[in-house]
Image (cartoon, rainbow, N blue to C red; front, side, top):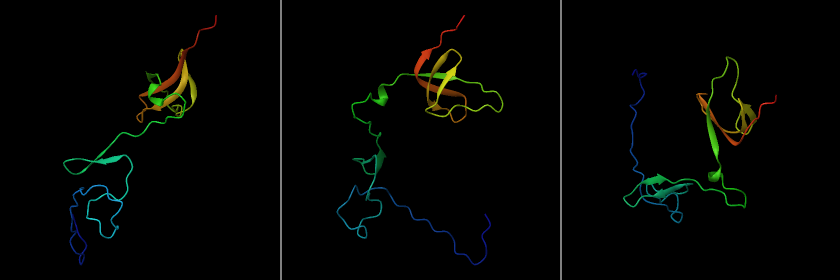
Length: 120
């Protein structure tokens, strides 16, 4: 890589993520790599940190993890867009609320699904 003349070389410093969760020590006195504040992370017993799963709400409503959903492969016509998450739609003979849209547009997931009866 070309470096403009007169600039000093880039220097790297590795900071191992260790030291634990410390809310008592002053930020100026914390050892490098110690956690001052975090969300959904925990300390490993061997050192370092790991991400823990998020929390699920408990407010008397049905738990989101109990939701049933159907994954549908989709083929969209050119210029046609996928419905956004939260939109109600009919997909062939199935209707429901879109709860996930694949970033590549290959499939969607719907919840609260129902079969639409054909009218004669």
